[in-house]
Image 1: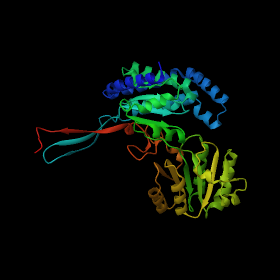
Image 2 (image 1 turned 180 degrees about the horizontal axis):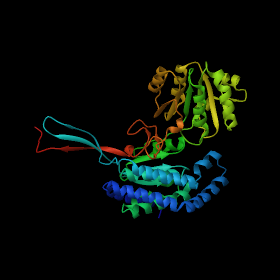
Image 3 (image 1 turned 90 degrees about the vertical axis):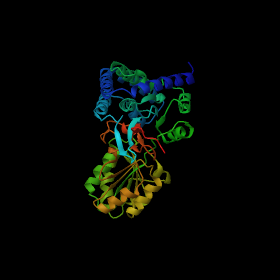
Image 4 (image 1 turned 30 degrees about the vertical axis):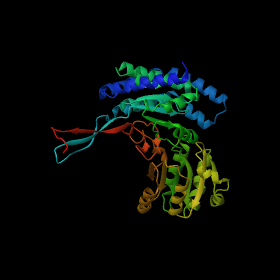
Length: 418
């Protein structure tokens, strides 16, 4: 079967399954999620073995350590995947939820209720753990999903998808609601983007150029998970111990993810007290520092930052640092260079916190907290399809509620329009 016929067949199967899944009761969907979680745990050793083949190819291709980290499956990460599915099962079912209702003077009762979107095409790179997250969220929200992972994780993703589909079948839910495009041919993505009559939403998750390409070529609406040029601003009156802990966590805990810190902004009044000690801790953790001239005067071991550094998503142990005159300059820098995913301020001045949260246009704005919390799981959403930087339909972590749309239900007793 050629690539076009393959993808179209999977999309048609997903469309039919979506209609059945949309009508499944909550208990069936929750049982399916439980079966999916148990399947991952039972197949953990086989999944790790399949992942080794992907890792071997990636190492031979000379990918970066950060890329390898995103690609790696361990038994602990598989257990996290299973736990995420169980957390999704524990969430309220959004399908059929009443958003609001009102009564018109003529007696009509008008309600808004949540319904599934239908068929979601999820196109992603390198992180096989998101296969389970995406499938689980779609099952809970009553949507079928077409999974197209990157070629670098083909073995891992194919096995995960097979395990998840078996879980649906065991629970009596339509197994075709989880479709995996098991080809590395890049034409598969182009075909999927054309199927506006079968697919309702495309969610791309990967590098900036990849996401832009999908958005430019898709005939299907796209919900973008864009790059994360993430900032933390340390204000003049910040608790320096708190600020250091937040910066270390945001940069070092897992640098290869989109909510990791990429640029640190420091108020000039606190920079002489904060930067030398914070830079020493960052350097001890293996972080390469790149700074503006004022930063270099306080941190001689740092490299001079180039104009490109302020717009770079490193996804690695590299941090750009700039000393700014005040909150206004920090806001201007973020407005110019931020990607709209997540931004944070560390401050003890309530007025500054409020001004920062109003002035910064990002999906998530944090006060006195690490940007690593920008995650569907950490927000109590079970998991996420990605962090949307779009301004329509959904913004921020995309969970089960964001995978639904609204339907009006009108109840009358014989009214006719005059």
